[in-house]
Each structure stands twice: as structure tokens, then as C-alpha cells.
Image (cartoon, rainbow, N blue to C red):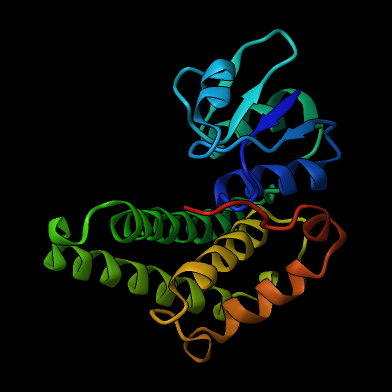
Length: 206
């Protein structure tokens, strides 16, 4: 399998680190949707990162669907709890983290790609509010449930840490670390693991 995309994308990094935790072999190709658009287009005409090129040549997209496919067909293991209540909590954390991530990407694209005269500040204020709301709820979830305090092989922990690193690199002024102590502690612990250190968030950015 080939994982296509830059590791400064939280979605690409999320997949790479998850596959490493699962012990699923793959190769990573650092191809950018911006600076190497045509190269990416030759691999996947949709030009969406991450793209997973399967052994038969099929291309899968969307980080959650890629990970669902891998766990169902290749891993023999899971980064999700088997207990229904614990899994529900994990899925809530992941949904909050990905919501914050999606809105953060929108904010970054608006600021960095749209001309200043065309930016709509009321919409940006709404997006920023959604990011803060998601992070506030996520921090409360992590603080309330001991299962997250020491876990590493957890999709909730992987996704939270990856997304937090991305948001801090792009929107640190919006999200002061003092306001999210549980997220900060979890992310610091996860970033020190061998799986995270193997896939640092390097890339050209937007």
C-alpha cells in the first residue's frame, strides 16, 4: 500500500501514525496537493489527501474511511475499544477533534488562499467559534474519562494529538494552551511516542 500526501496535513499524519500503531506495512509518498499538484493528479485525479493506493491499484480517500478499511481487512487489531460505552466516548472525542480540524482547515484556507478583499469576517467569526466550541467540549471529555489519561493505542488519542498539533501550528492565538490542559497533556504524551516521532508534521504548508 502507498499513502500519498504531506505529513503537515493532519489527515495524512493521522493515517500514517494509525497504520504504524496497527503494524500495517505501507510506504509513504510525500506529494503535495499544492506544490506538486500535477504529480498528485497522476496518482489520483481527484487530488485529495490522504489517498491510499491499494495493492490492486484502487485509490481510497478520506482518513476515516481509509482507517475503517484497513482495520476491517488487514489489521487484525483495532485502535477502538470493544466495549460499547468506551467506544462511544472515543467516537465522541474523535468527532469533536475532526470537527475542530475541518473548521481549522477552512479558516486557514480562507486566510491564506482567498484574497483579503474577498474574506467575509462574519463567516470567519462563526468558524472560529465552532473551533473553540469543539476544543472546549473535547477538553472536557478527556478530563472526565480516565481511559484517555494513559492510553496510546487509541484512535481518540491519536486523532486528538494530531489535530491539536495542526491547530497550534496554524491557529495558536485562537487556542491558548492554558485553556485546554487535558488536550495539551494528551498531545505532549502522544507526540513523544515512537509512532508519532516517526511521522513528524513536515511539509510546505499552505
